[in-house]
Amino acid sequence: MTRPRASQSPDSTIVGVATGTPDGGVAIVRVSGPEARALVEPLVETLPSPRTLARRLLRDGEGAGDEALVAWMPGPRSFTGEDVIELHVHAGARNVGRIVSTLQQRGARAAGPGEFTRRAFEHGRLSLEQAEGIAALIAARTSAAIDQARRLVAGELGREVEALRTVVGDLRAEIEANLDFPEDVAAGDVRRWREELMQHEATARAWLRSFAAGQRARERARVVIAGPPNAGKSALFNALLGRSRAIVSPTPGTTRDYVEAELQLDSLEVVVVDTAGLRHATDDSIEHEGIGRSREQIAGAELVLWLEPADVDPLDAAVSEALRVESKRDLGTRRPDWLGVSVQTGEGLEGLRVEIARKLRGDESAPWIGLARHRDRASEAASAMASALAQLERAAPLELVAFELGVAERQLAEITGRDALGPVGEEVLGRIFSQFCIGK
Image (cartoon, rainbow, N blue to C red; front, side):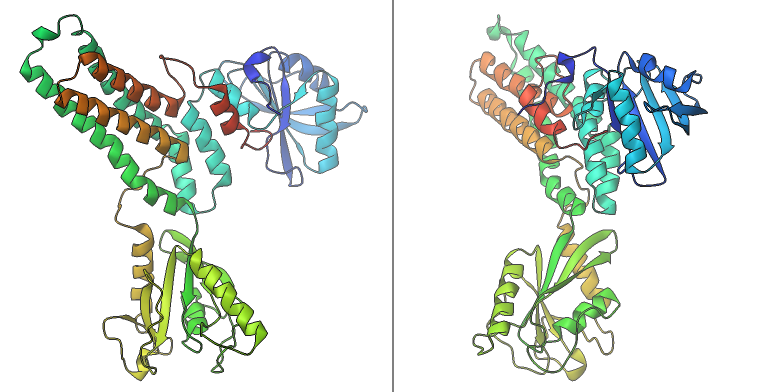
């Protein structure tokens, strides 16, 4: 069922719990809409001065009173652009629930997922990618994800996109100005248009090349340690973590199931996985099951460390695209072109950490902060610019060039959600804001 647009009920006043959970020390109940003051003020006797936090006695529908801190932010200078009141109250599910219920009984409507942020977007307080940045900030699982989300909320991506959209729009307007007299277009103008268009397309393509690096930084990559039994996988796992997490034994087949733990590598946060040793045949049904799970982990890994010990001849079973590591280097070496490590002496461990981080980061030194939707629109814009460039090079009618530039301009505008050429579709907005939590 599709939730109605906030703009379809502009006179409604909504209420929601703005904090993550109501069971901390303090909970924030947020009210937004034209009736916010009328609904809340009778419960606190008088509202404080705008944009100040003041203590008030808050009475709920059952007549009980509780001390609260109250902030009143008249629109349009508020988060949503409407009148907003925040009640900072003692937490606890029942206490917060009674306050929200009282406000609903007085006429407020329960806010839907992301409805406060959507109202901020619809009132021009946020662009669409900034709103998505708020959702990304809430869902961030790594430090890099937090940094990227904050940059989105600050409008960094929107400024870059709007700058490109402006120059593409200017070029389109100049070409359209020549539609009635194409015979008067000088060769130098066409050459300049082509050069500008190549530059604009290159900007969008650079974003796309950097997207994967940004995505890797936002997620916890899975690094799987694999290899034959007794290769020292669990010992290396523990050494990378700096603590004993997996059982280490000289007996082959000790690890029967995979074990995983979080690992910080410089600014990267990864999940490292220790797996059961791989061998072709075993009569142990439990070990056989562990080998199957190891193969599943290898298949889902961003990076595999294939481990073989220095005291055993090389095998022909290395996983393709794996980072090959020779363990037990304190016993010698039989694979001089592999990365060598020794858990006993510490040899090569820091170099291995550096190489893992380098592999996961890839070749891009400047990750793009755009999310998947932004990447798709930027890709479509780049393709439209490439098509416009092809039309120019084959001396096609200028109408076709201008049309493709208009497509590129619209795709870029969809990233920020502010498009003079047409509104962003309700399907897009509904999909974006449905991913938000209640109260945001």
